Image (cartoon, rainbow, N blue to C red):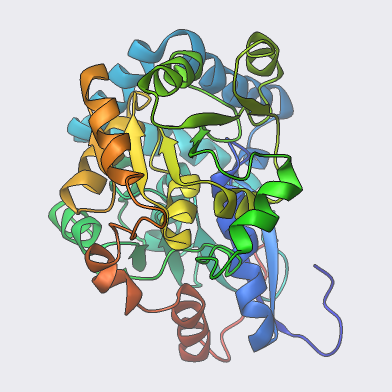
Amino acid sequence: MPDGGGLRERIVVVSADIGAGHQAVAVELADRLAADRIVVEHVNFFTALPRPLHVMSRESYRAMLRWLPWGYDALFTIADRSSPAVTALRTSLRLTARRMLMRLPPGTRLVVTTFPLANQLFGPLRGTGRLTTPLISYVTDFMVHSGWVSPGVDTYCVIHEAARRQAVARGAADVRVVSPLVSARFTPLPGDGKRAARARFGLPEQDRLALIVAGAWGVGDVTRTAAEVLASGCARPVVVCGHNDSLRRRLQTFPGYVMGWVDDMPSLMRAVDVVVENAGGLTCQQSLATGLPTVTYRPIPGHGRANAAMLADAGLTTYVTNTSGLRPALTALTASAHPAPATTAAQTDTATATDMATVVSQAMRQTAGRRRDYR
C-alpha cells in the first residue's frame, strides 16, 4: 500500500500463501486500520526462504493434505505435544532471521503475524532485542496449537474464550479475545434476500441447499461428503471446489451444484440453508458470522479435527462424527423455513470482544515515537 495522503503510521502484517485464510485476515485487518490512517505492509512469511524452498514448502503441505493426510496428522500431533520439536523448529528458523528483517520497511512501528511459523521466527528476535517493535499475533484457528506460542510474542489475539484458556495453558502471557477478522459483508440477510442470492448463482428458489466448502484448496474427502449429503435427502449439495480444478472435474456429473472459486462468498452463503465444512478455518467463521447453521463433517486431519472438537464443545457448530449422524443433523438444522442460528447464544463472548484493529491502534499509540530501520 503506498504511503500517500500524509499517512505515516506503518505496521507490517506477516501472513503466508498457504490456503487463503492467513492472507485474507491480513487484508481484512488492513481494511479496518485504514480508518485510523495506518499504512499496512503485507509480507509473505515464505519470502524469508529462497524461492525454491518457498514453492516446495507450500506444495509439500498441499500434497500432504491431499495424499498423505495421516502423515500431516502425525506431524501436527507431534509438534503440538513435543516442546523439543517446536524448539528445534524455532532454532532452524534463525537462519532466515536477517532475510526476514530486511523485509521490514523503514518506519515499521509494529509487527502482526497471522501464521504460526512467523511467531517462531519473530518471537526470539523480539526477545533478544533485534526486533524492537511490539509483536502481536492473530491466531486464525479456534484451536491454539503449540506452534503458535513462542517466547517474545507480546500479545496473542484469539477468537473465543476457550481458545484464550488454551493459549494461557500453553504459556502465553497476554492473551485477548477479539472478534474474528471476517468482512462485515458476512451478515444475516433479512427479508426475501435469499431469493435474489439464489437467482444470482442460478440456484433453485425452493430447494433446501447445503453449501459444502473445503477451503481455497478444496482439500479433504469432498466427493464423498457431497454424495452423502445428497443421499441424506435433506438438502441439495452446493459444492465449492476452490482452486482445486481436478476436484471440479471429478464432480462434473454430480447431480448437485458444483462451483470453482467463488468471489462473492457472502452472497452464496445467504443463498443456502446450512453449511457443511471440514476445517474450522476462515470459511467456518464466515458462515457463523452469517448466522448459518454449520456442520463439521469429515474434518481434515490435524487442525481440522482439533478445530472441530473445540467448535462443538463451544456450541458453535454441530460436529457429525459418522455417516449415520449426518441425516439427523441436517434434518434438525433445516427443519423450519427460516432456521434460527444455533450459534447466537454461544457467541456471546465473541460478540462483545475487542476489535483486532483496536488492539493494534492501542499498541501503536503506546509505542509513539519509537522508530527503527531494520535494514
